[in-house]
Image (cartoon, rainbow, N blue to C red):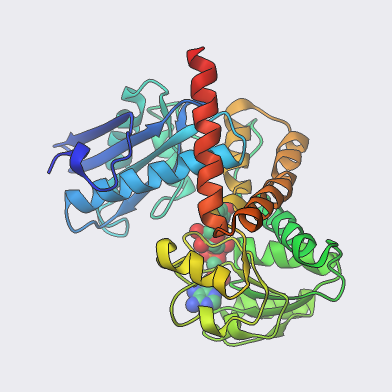
Length: 353
Ligand code: NAD
């Protein structure tokens, strides 16, 4: 099967395959759409069973980045790269440099950042051979860890959802159940606590639980039942696929809004299932856009204040998604996709005119 016949091929502008015999590097870079700017999205290193699986992932993830960047109103298109290999055993500095040369060969049409299987140190190695890399600590530049900005965006998104459901974004006394109090979940919890919310947390890491209990006065629930807690908001900040056949019927909160990627196990079924239960779902790639806004700010040298202001706008964007979904009786994730596609099409027409 050729790329053009793959089910996940969606008019992608460019899909490039790279190999380097000396290092064993095999990678792919997919550029979905560059209407809004250079394609930007992280590098994922994963032990794909075969190259078809790697290609499917690159096609899907790069389209996801087009939508995410469009919804965050960024001057960036959507792209993604994947390296075929186990990040724990196959990664070497030479292999990272081979990937950097692949990125560099696209002359800035694709800018990479961190994703699963990659570390700050890897980004530094890649940066020795290409300047088209962002989203890590660079001397003299704002940026580095995107988690605090992701958390700020999630907090703004939760407030927007609360305002949509209750008519006010006052968080005093709101009970928020957070699954995963790691980098993003903990910072989100901190903002919520400062705004007067009550916190219930679950994590598989005892240290992270202890931190949330001791510093934020959170109460603790079990990781596998946190979604079913009596709460106003359920905030998934750990795992993907948390909204599935088993969990959706058990959710008591009227709002699901959190940082985790790919929360809907099967978007085509579970988006509608959540809506049918009267639960307002904040599409994950919209509410967790603060991280890519931070990455973009590093590319274009934006000030911290600008980056924060753009991240705060996630709340308003979600408000538009919620309102349109209600008007049209459609799941919120579908509406977000529609708005993202429309933004790209509008920019395309404006460019062509
Ligand atoms: P993290 O690894 O720092 O935190 C995840 C936390 O979840 C950890 O404390 C971990 O122990 C906990 N956890 C793992 N399995 C769990 C389970 N079964 N039940 C409860 N807790 C569990 O990761 P992070 O950077 O905070 O990211 C959290 C989520 O947000 C991920 O899905 C990530 O893809 C997504 N995200 C993160 C960013 C970012 O800027 N870091 C940006 C966009 C999306």
